[in-house]
Length: 210
Image (cartoon, one colour):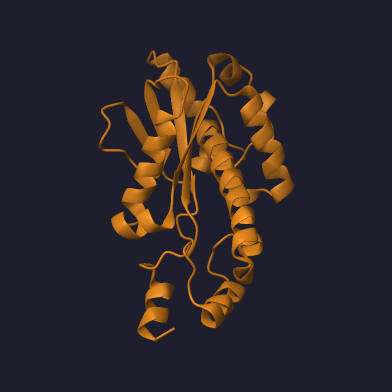
């Protein structure tokens, strides 16, 4: 079942007309940034969600369908913001604080101030805005699914660029996730500046003298 606008409609009924859905991509990766996106859908789009047909949890879609969904979100959303936090800040702050920082940055990039937030799994305690944390929100809530697509496509494009700068690691294929090929590249070449050195596989490599 595709994500619905149930949560957004509840917010509309409470008088919140600008509701931002937030999600991230790359939280569990060994390399590259964590990327968050914030998407505000207008009441007109929420009344006719079919214009975003095909927008779903990014993990359920092929790369081609993600690109198609991304284009629809950009075309129809009232506002889209993106926040990018690089590996060295993930190492400095930890992945959860870094993810929250990416989400806060994404909100600051929106062309309007949202009145309420729908967030995949997290809360942003720094903000006083009304917010709802939804487990598996990207599969349940259309605004969060839209944010999931924007975050994923943005990050994948960044990792394709990273592949050009550091071709030995295969970033274009695995996007920094912990695949066997990535593990082998790390064993052969050691970490590059895009690696998260506080993550367990990198710590183990350092402990082993790699």
